[in-house]
Length: 183
Image (cartoon, rainbow, N blue to C red; front, side, top):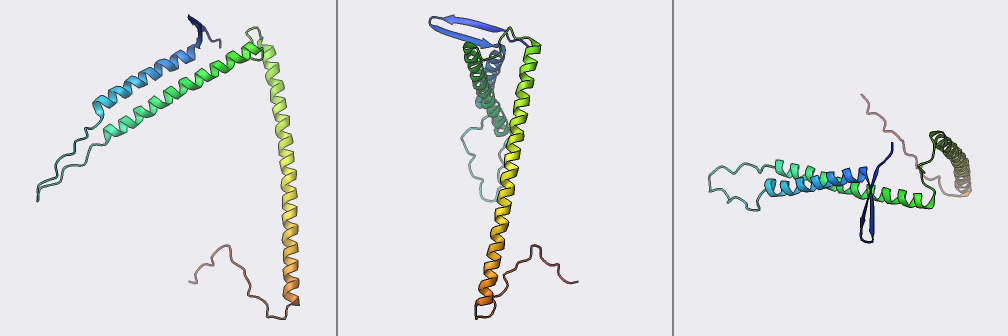
């Protein structure tokens, strides 16, 4: 999929936009318009109704639907402008990469691109395998070390208890599961 780019020159400022950025900008402007219309038409006024007379029925609860619509339109507004920012940043990064000669070049054939992607995937798979192997070795070391410490602690505790003249301490054993009540 090729992106057509429109180039605009305005004095010393050069702006190069992609189709995706233009579409996102149009959607963001539409979301801004929708937010303005929602604020002007659907937001409740700040006036609160007077309290009911003694012995009269209380007023009905306020209608919360306009607030729900406002929340949805505000979310759409925020997400659309965030998309504009992300797409503009992406376009800027791609432009910089092309200037440096590291980005996708227009003259790159599908076979060359496939070969580069395959080499990149193989490198990623190799790195992941090495990281998993290192993690597995480290977990084995930590588990062995923990077991040895627990064994040493148990041995030392037993030796202290055996050499003391006092009565053995109360067992500090807690069940993982509660025993069911008798029937």
